[in-house]
Image 1 (cartoon, rainbow, N blue to C red):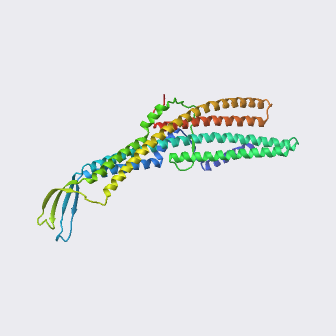
Image 2: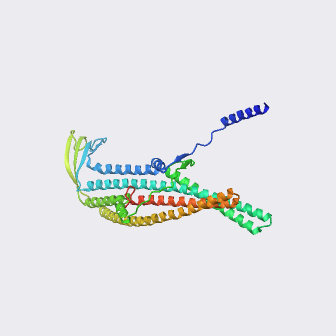
Image 3: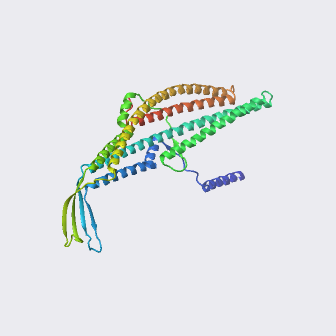
Length: 415
């Protein structure tokens, strides 16, 4: 009875302790790559910057178009003696294409800004993808190095036992200690890289705080059939950076035309209602057409034309340079993708072999024909081989994502 009562009291005590204890950290949730990308596009401040840049360009278009609309203003002066007061309306009638070219330039700049926004979006998707797979890669690498630490720890224990029994020298123990220390250093490096990869993923997703996710991992991968020339042609048509540079080239052309038109006069109309001041003895409307021509401005117009031509040449050179870079990038990524596929085949064979060795070691250990050290070594070898195989898959996925980005996001890179 005393024992039953004690057990009941202990159960009640445990229950009260559990209820009184503060709740632990929030449970980690599973995060897929698609969810990570969606979060990044919604939360990363870089997307806000891109949207704001588009709004700024839109306002510049409206500012350029404002020259087509009448300007209404009033002038009230006191005292009125010898001064003119009234309401005035000025309307530009014709400026030989200066305004139309400025509007054309601002619209082209707006188009370029939108393509810059697409570039930022594609770069963010790629950064999120790379960070996502880097986290998975370093998770497997850390696990493999933990196994290696365990293996060398058991080896050290065995060497120490042999040394005490007089079957091993002090040098053997020292070597085992050094091997264990190196394994721990490798584990520390892997854990540090894992934390850095987690921070990079959180930064891409635009999230502050601790990393509280379990990343969804799939061993399969989609093989890509490569056609280099088709990929290059598609990239030259699809890359938003190239589209942006083409739009900026069009803007520079329009700016040059507008600068050249500065030598021509401006034809404008004015309507006014004057009620006080010289020339307005009686309130009334006046209207007329005027011609404005700047005869000399200290070579300002000439400098503007020179600047516009230089800007145009630079824009054209940037476009040609980018085309060359895109072609070189795609050729390299095709080579990298082929190498990544070969690495998957090699590491898969190694993993299969190490898996068979591990199964044999476990059976031998069960039959008491193998030591703990032999089993730990087989587990370490398999964990390392498995991490290498996973790394090869992640490298392939990352390279495929880079190639898709290089071709132009939604571009077709298949045969």
